[in-house]
Length: 108
Image 1: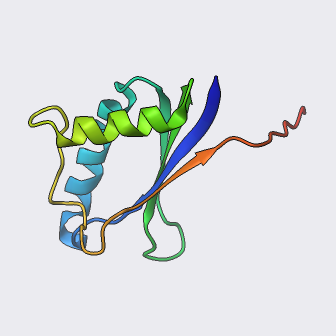
Image 2: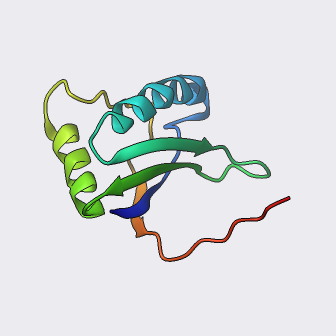
């Protein structure tokens, strides 16, 4: 089994819609994790500036590219995944698929 992450940066479409964007994203995390191969998700907010939000989706599959293909297929199907115009699309979110190539654990 391969392990990896899908790393996504995005922003709300406006400051006025930031609460709506965050509420929608909570639902979106669950929708993505329902797709085979996706095993969990975390989301991070900018701390010191107005930089993008970051979502990190954990993937474990025979082929992590198949999990990403499943996400794109779900996005393309009418009614299977809710997208929101509260997310900025110009420029679009940045999406990167990364394969696990090493680990280190700290035991304290």
